[in-house]
Length: 112
Image 1 (cartoon, helix red, strand yellow):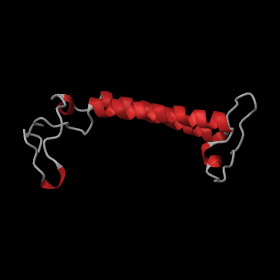
Image 2: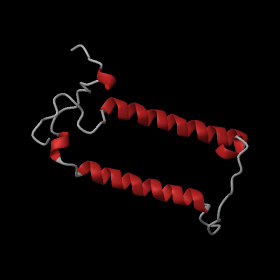
Image 3: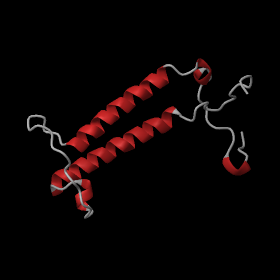
Image 4: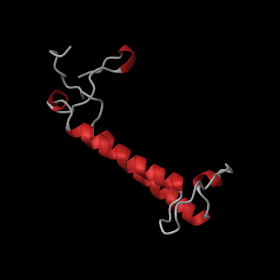
Protein backbone atom coordinates (compact mmCIF):
# COMPACT_ATOMS: atom_id res chain seq x y z
CA UNK A 1 0.00 0.00 0.00
CA UNK A 2 1.66 3.24 -1.13
CA UNK A 3 -0.29 5.43 1.30
CA UNK A 4 0.92 3.66 4.45
CA UNK A 5 4.15 5.27 5.70
CA UNK A 6 7.03 3.25 7.08
CA UNK A 7 6.62 3.82 10.81
CA UNK A 8 9.98 3.28 12.45
CA UNK A 9 10.99 0.55 10.05
CA UNK A 10 13.87 0.38 7.66
CA UNK A 11 12.03 0.53 4.37
CA UNK A 12 14.40 -1.56 2.29
CA UNK A 13 16.11 -3.80 4.85
CA UNK A 14 19.45 -2.13 5.50
CA UNK A 15 20.78 -0.25 8.50
CA UNK A 16 24.04 1.65 8.82
CA UNK A 17 25.38 -0.39 11.74
CA UNK A 18 24.71 -3.74 10.06
CA UNK A 19 26.28 -2.62 6.78
CA UNK A 20 29.41 -1.29 8.53
CA UNK A 21 29.80 -4.50 10.51
CA UNK A 22 29.30 -6.63 7.41
CA UNK A 23 31.83 -4.59 5.45
CA UNK A 24 34.47 -4.76 8.18
CA UNK A 25 34.06 -8.52 8.63
CA UNK A 26 34.39 -8.97 4.86
CA UNK A 27 37.59 -6.88 4.85
CA UNK A 28 39.06 -8.98 7.66
CA UNK A 29 38.14 -12.13 5.73
CA UNK A 30 39.98 -10.92 2.63
CA UNK A 31 43.08 -10.07 4.70
CA UNK A 32 43.06 -13.53 6.30
CA UNK A 33 42.70 -15.22 2.90
CA UNK A 34 45.58 -13.21 1.44
CA UNK A 35 47.79 -13.97 4.45
CA UNK A 36 46.90 -17.66 4.20
CA UNK A 37 47.85 -17.74 0.52
CA UNK A 38 51.06 -15.79 1.17
CA UNK A 39 52.18 -18.09 4.00
CA UNK A 40 51.30 -21.44 2.39
CA UNK A 41 51.92 -20.53 -1.25
CA UNK A 42 48.66 -22.25 -2.23
CA UNK A 43 45.31 -20.87 -3.25
CA UNK A 44 42.20 -21.24 -1.11
CA UNK A 45 40.86 -24.23 -3.04
CA UNK A 46 44.26 -25.94 -3.13
CA UNK A 47 44.60 -25.70 0.66
CA UNK A 48 41.50 -27.85 1.04
CA UNK A 49 42.69 -30.37 -1.53
CA UNK A 50 40.24 -29.32 -4.23
CA UNK A 51 41.42 -29.24 -7.83
CA UNK A 52 41.93 -25.79 -9.26
CA UNK A 53 42.48 -25.01 -12.91
CA UNK A 54 44.52 -21.88 -13.51
CA UNK A 55 42.32 -21.05 -16.47
CA UNK A 56 43.27 -19.51 -19.75
CA UNK A 57 46.29 -17.32 -19.23
CA UNK A 58 46.10 -13.86 -20.72
CA UNK A 59 49.19 -12.33 -22.37
CA UNK A 60 52.22 -12.37 -20.03
CA UNK A 61 52.38 -8.60 -19.60
CA UNK A 62 48.94 -8.50 -17.90
CA UNK A 63 49.80 -10.91 -15.09
CA UNK A 64 46.19 -12.13 -14.82
CA UNK A 65 44.70 -15.48 -15.62
CA UNK A 66 41.16 -15.44 -16.97
CA UNK A 67 39.14 -16.39 -13.83
CA UNK A 68 40.55 -13.61 -11.61
CA UNK A 69 40.14 -11.09 -14.43
CA UNK A 70 36.51 -12.12 -14.91
CA UNK A 71 35.90 -11.96 -11.16
CA UNK A 72 37.45 -8.49 -10.95
CA UNK A 73 35.41 -7.18 -13.88
CA UNK A 74 32.23 -8.68 -12.43
CA UNK A 75 32.88 -7.08 -9.04
CA UNK A 76 33.43 -3.65 -10.62
CA UNK A 77 30.29 -3.91 -12.74
CA UNK A 78 28.20 -5.07 -9.76
CA UNK A 79 29.56 -2.28 -7.55
CA UNK A 80 28.78 0.39 -10.12
CA UNK A 81 25.29 -1.03 -10.59
CA UNK A 82 24.61 -1.06 -6.83
CA UNK A 83 25.79 2.55 -6.51
CA UNK A 84 23.57 3.54 -9.42
CA UNK A 85 20.53 1.80 -7.89
CA UNK A 86 21.23 3.31 -4.47
CA UNK A 87 21.47 6.83 -5.85
CA UNK A 88 18.29 6.68 -7.90
CA UNK A 89 15.92 4.80 -5.60
CA UNK A 90 12.54 6.30 -5.04
CA UNK A 91 12.63 9.08 -2.44
CA UNK A 92 9.88 7.36 -0.46
CA UNK A 93 12.31 4.62 0.53
CA UNK A 94 14.76 7.10 2.03
CA UNK A 95 12.36 9.66 3.48
CA UNK A 96 12.23 8.29 7.04
CA UNK A 97 15.25 7.61 9.28
CA UNK A 98 16.23 4.01 9.89
CA UNK A 99 15.21 3.18 13.47
CA UNK A 100 14.97 -0.60 13.32
CA UNK A 101 12.38 -3.25 12.70
CA UNK A 102 9.17 -3.04 14.71
CA UNK A 103 7.88 -6.55 13.97
CA UNK A 104 9.76 -9.66 15.00
CA UNK A 105 9.44 -12.96 13.13
CA UNK A 106 6.88 -15.62 14.03
CA UNK A 107 4.50 -13.16 15.66
CA UNK A 108 6.79 -12.27 18.58
CA UNK A 109 6.13 -8.86 20.11
CA UNK A 110 8.77 -6.36 21.14
CA UNK A 111 8.36 -4.23 24.25
CA UNK A 112 8.71 -0.57 23.36
